[in-house]
Length: 463
Image 1 (spheres, rainbow, N blue to C red):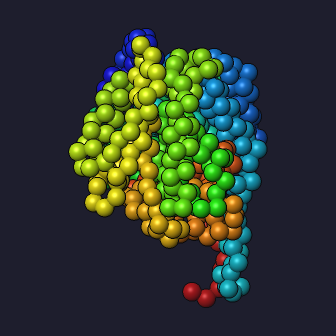
Image 2 (cartoon, rainbow, N blue to C red):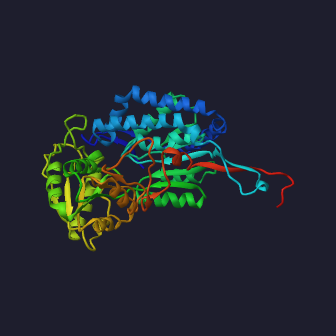
């Protein structure tokens, strides 16, 4: 597994990182466990101090951190700054809220004989985070901020194309004052990764990535009886009802599909528009996409970044060709393409009805699938015709109606009149083949803690 930085805009290979040695893996595990034994006893106040410090460093050095994101995976510098700020906000959220979220919970009992019962929350040990390249800081913070705040320690196996981002996160936590061994980035081989998962001191695995990777890691963790959380992508529905404000809805649709060059699990991949406004929506959407500008992601004028790699471009081309073979119709939007860079012109796909298998796929890039729905009920049917269940959105001027539609969509998240809302104080996660478990807020911090029952019972109580 080659860990290397290749600039998606220039194609230049900037730096290659060697794989971890077996000895480095051993030391990382030993130190993470040794640090856990003391960190679990550290006060919430001290843990919060580290989280606050991490947030402050990210904000102080936002330009430095943001440039790393743009350099390694090609996102717009404005989006890189937004990701860096969001990462800081997550650290800050847990600095402020971790102790409250993990307070003991008194249990109501049916009889005095049951005693005084309560649930306390205790850290488990080392948590392994396996993270993707599309949000190199944010995805990591979603795991380490809550888990370090809970008293766990963490190891990171990041995507192979963002090694500098991974190393930057380790430096961040060291500078923030986390004890040595509390968080360590590794560049492991697949065999070493299996060794880490199997180690008794590793008490949980959190993965964000592909279905294939999730299945393999979940199987390895399951064999070792380790808990996992899985965020495995999606094909979010963007439902447009007949009473939607079309002008604003189209703007959100263009943004929702093309931010981060369309390489987002929760981007609006399937536009499902009721018949009454379908033609007008498509006309405006086509115009909106045509107004995007490809270019240097460091240039503020650029609105559509390159994909993360040339390999990602080729994968998307193959997927698109297969969709067309199955009967889909592809309309390429003729944007000017720079002479260099892993760029992919936006494509609008139609003709995905019936048994066309492409309607069930996730296109990780600027490919929009458009569906004409007869009415609201048909839009819900199309939305649920998917193996995925991550997010989705409903656009209508009747908010109560939007909520009722949202209740009928089989996903972990639905947003009314917005394509997605990624914030430090909102939970994240899906169902079906989009995975299981939740990240962020109290749901996330409790994924890898021991919810222990303590019951003080009268010694003379009956059995």
